[in-house]
Amino acid sequence: MTTLFNLFAVSQYMENYGAHDWDHNGECPQYWKPKGGTWYLLATGLSVDEVTQMGGAGLHKLAMRLMRDNVEHHNHYSEEYMIDWEIREQGAGTPAEEWETVVNIWDVPKRT
Image (cartoon, rainbow, N blue to C red):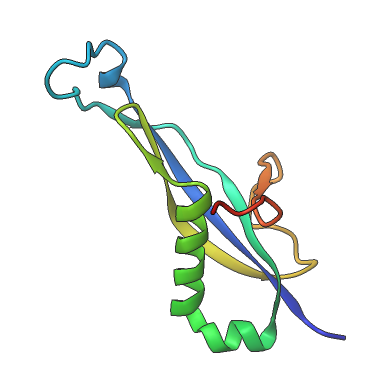
């Protein structure tokens, strides 16, 4: 039986409370508050050879690229960015708590 792996990442979502009353004149007030985060399934079906060849640095780079291309954003009002990633053997569950929902971006059509 072939062992396959899934790549997950967790984000931090921040909201700028200073922007709520901003009139778009001058600098936007900065009052950032953390508002939680989300677990994402970034890749599924990675083989042992792929995981071994990429190593920790390569997996980190892959997670960063997939999060940047599909999830991360930054503007005056909010931002979301990756804070951690994890690789798990398929069938071993997810790193999320049981009350959290993992968002599957692996099947989302890629931007061109």
